[in-house]
Image 1: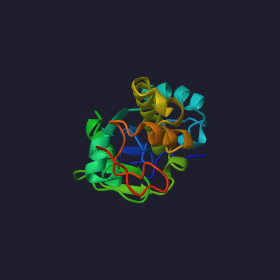
Image 2: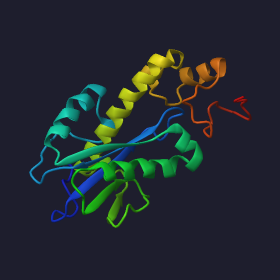
Image 3: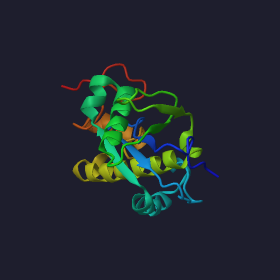
Image 4: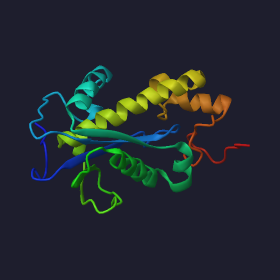
Length: 200
């Protein structure tokens, strides 16, 4: 059973990101503030849930949360400031968009760059330990999947409706055959055993 909070007397927002290991597209993050009476036995780390379960939980989270928001850092920002900093930026943008100001942030992972004067706690594998982070993981994942489905309509040869931009064999074969799209992260290793790749 996941915990609801670390500091019950504070307004806590759980934060998580999705798409960090992808070769294409933006990285998405979500911030979620849950009410003190929130219960949901099914809610867990989004990676432990099926796609059906994630999309079934999303409206429940959105309806019952005191506040929620999604932040994005695009592929160009990822190439400019690197994926770690872009993940921090997306989470900070999500927190900034909340209509309730949190007093404490629960961050999935082991690193974060402090946002304004709000204290935070990093929790390794927090999406499987704390409900606010699990809720954020579901929102970040589903909104990013929706985004990749839209990009797939524009570039159907890369199988993004299935791989969501992750480095599957089919995805890499398409890059090898057709080259990178304008949405690919050019600072990433797009091809296995890659030495050089001409983007001109």
